[in-house]
Length: 108
Image (cartoon, rainbow, N blue to C red; front, side):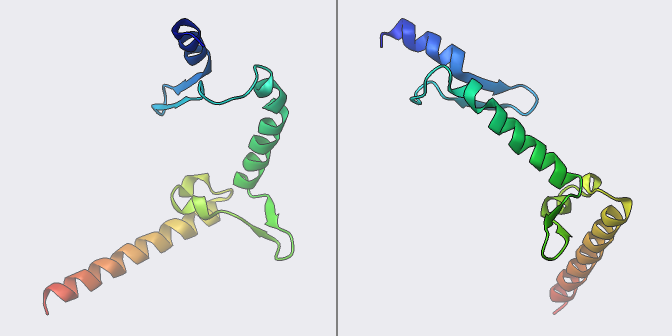
């Protein structure tokens, strides 16, 4: 492939998200031009499944539990106010405990 064709391929296959600053160059990956459109339904299904999990869908049917470990980093995403409050309260208690431990070590 000549330099002109490589440049066009780069421009067509570069993904850049201005909001996050994330960029991904797929120009050197070997897939045909129809690959992304063929994958669109699978990608959409994955995004829909993720949205359901984030909304509190039961992910572990045997134990009837949600999966929300990512809520620990962003309690506001929890599906209920009660869950968000429990996370926020627990994190605050952990930070208070850690500060007390650090303070007691300084005085030793």
